[in-house]
Amino acid sequence: MKIRTSEYMIRETFLSLKRNNWMTVASVGTVAVSLFIFGMFLILAMNMNKMVASLESQVQISVYLKDDLSKGDRKDIETDIRGMQGIATVKFVSRDEALQRFKERLGDQKFLLDALGDANPLPDAFEVTVTHPDMVRTAAEAIGNFKGVESAKYGQDVIQHLFDITRLIRIMGFTLMALLAGATLFIISNTIRLTVFARRKEIAIMKYVGATDWFIRWPFLLEGMVLGFLGGVIAVVLLNSVYSAIVVKVYSTLAFFPLIQEYPFLIYVTLLILVSGMCIGALGSTISLKRFLRV
Image (cartoon, rainbow, N blue to C red):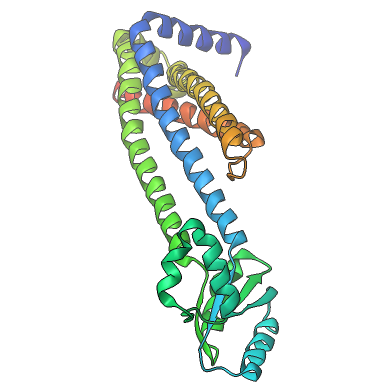
């Protein structure tokens, strides 16, 4: 593309933005709101995924044994568990130790167990950890089928609930983003359609004298991309400020909470938001130009 042609296209882009200043502001604002909400849902979903992964990495399998097992049978089960692939540690917890732990957990309310007297309803158990979180479910299912094992639990209900919440956040985020993207496309395409309509005679003359569709289209495409980029910049500034404030607040009160570190995470989010804004703007321009290029 020649330098003179490039200068013409850039000049026409910014003249058009200035000419339709109120529609430009509306378009940029709509893009900014849409991309901000999209970014917030994306950040929330990514942090939920990290939380689930963190919980999975700390999960241990509680293997509850049947009451009628002999010491030899219990030893055989322990040997079988240790012989499995991916097992990191195996620790035996007697029913007496389990009851003592339970009392410590109850704290001031341990009097609730007084009604049991000398009876201990808790079973002997093994606490098993694996080398990789992905192996937890498979190992628990395999151990649960061992002879003499009552059940093998790893808190799957909690993790499954977290997965369900993460999935719901994704669905809500993408649905809302789709609706907002539709509204954004509508406003951007109408903003550019006003410019195209005002210059329809000029466009027709350019077509008649041999101007290509792309020569006519480029200033409007650039206009849409600039609108999307500006909206993306506003969304990115807000997202970075909000997420940084959340990270500082969470780490000052819940230092153990597994939030994703700001960098390079926010850099990737920034790039995604800006590219998305420019793509939405370009698409809005393309939609608005179709009818006017048919001469």
